[in-house]
Image 1 (cartoon, rainbow, N blue to C red):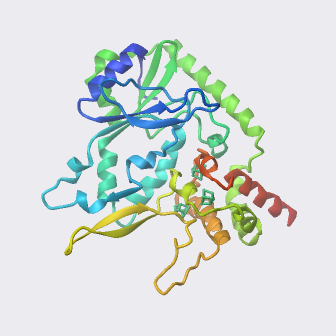
Image 2 (spheres, protein in one colour):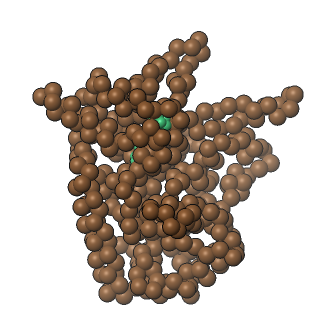
Length: 354
Ligand code: SF4
Ligand code: SF4
Ligand code: SF4
């Protein structure tokens, strides 16, 4: 484990105010304090806004900082421009462990493919991720079912864990260590008793989350790939798609979904610009090719594609499912299609066949 520090709450705002000088800082905010279940949204904090500690993940997925829902990508590239400078420097505070694990899929696609996406790479290099422990969870959260703990274990630059009147701070990368070194007046080395208190708090939350998951009777992680493959011809897909309105929300809000299309936008009589827009495999035209042929013509085939991609393709190719249990797709779906229930239905039908 890397070295752990302590920072008082009053000092954390001062620290953020200092680092804001060189970066755009994004921190969660609460939309409606009186809501039954609070939602956290990201905002850019400036000199008169203080940061909010989010108990669980934000509404927006982490991917929205690295690929926009719609952007003119050609604006970033020209012989006179340096892509690293154009991408801008950012600090994102309040990232949770589910998003950090889910983001491995984005890195795999945009950094480890045949071509590296240089805009994505520049943004990744220029961004500091300050993650934080979950202190609570939403009804839809099921990260632990995929063996993702509710506190980050890797993939962050700095991680904060609330403790008494302050936070324990752990550096998880060179960038994080440099930041602590640069602002060392704010941090004091943590005592063993504080680290042990953090362990107790983390264990308590894991116990609460385990009890929460027991009520959901989820399909065990090791079974998921098998039942998705066995269920290829089941009527589960037709049954669950009855309420789908093809809005694409489940894909667009998902931190592991990465499909996009490149479209042309007319800029002048002589010039087009390339626009990159997030795509969704639930859209009717997602797989349509020239001539009108469409291998994913029915909504059922498209829903099955989403599950095959997440729970078969990525398990084979990256050794992990393309799902981090954040539950965003469950919250966003106007058709009330719940990924947990689809998997449970496949498991039930798979068992009945034996
Ligand atoms: S194919 Fe579907 S499930 Fe897979 S990344 Fe694209 S939109 Fe997401
Ligand atoms: S499929 Fe749903 S639960 Fe899984 S990562 Fe995507 S949005 Fe989260
Ligand atoms: S969010 Fe629900 S209704 Fe919208 S495309 Fe996804 S499954 Fe269909």
